[in-house]
Length: 271
Image (tube, rainbow, N blue to C red; front, side, top):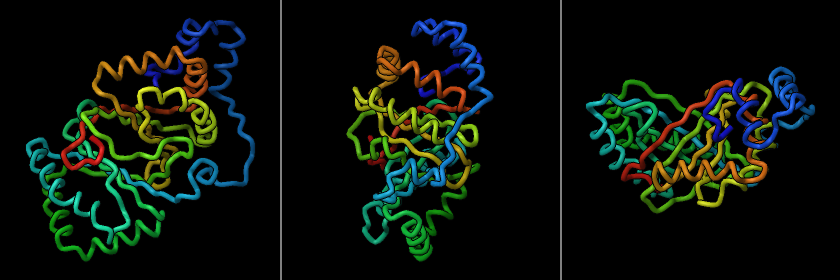
């Protein structure tokens, strides 16, 4: 599903030609998979089965749609404030990355924060920032520049890399998937085996799933040197044994998918 910029109705023909899976039985089973999902009953919460329990990291992703004429001023405002929060040990949070969307929604800023210690750390940061006059002024000034904003709280998949600072220059792709309710475990099972196929160029940055906000939402974050490197890397994945099966079986789990190409801002630890 990561590299499937095509609809589920096209997948049997395309995948059959790509991997020799054109038999009638395979097509029948594929179409049946659209309507019949077999999931073993579990008493565990999905989050406990999929995430890195021992680390208890919580992530927040923010999407800010900025007035076009204010984007430069918005970026400068963030550069003046966000790194100081990141560097101050008083706040148990880290700025993982901050970007402007290049292709996708225009005039958009995306921020990703990590809270080591989970929900208590998030609450502690929120309470402390309310007492921070500089941050209060930042929020007031920022509000004048925004058209809309939304956020999600996320957990990280246990089988993905933990996102760490990177030297640049890089472009980043955020691929977001709205899954069908009840299919998160299936998604995790396939990607736990597949992520090793997408590590050759260090392109895999982080994988997350939503806890608060849009539910059954998955975000995969990738890094590439440029758009041509992205194209070459994505095409090379189809030569890896097993990759076509990941696409074949995960496409029916998706209700909607979206891709953003993003450029790091000066304040981003990921360049």
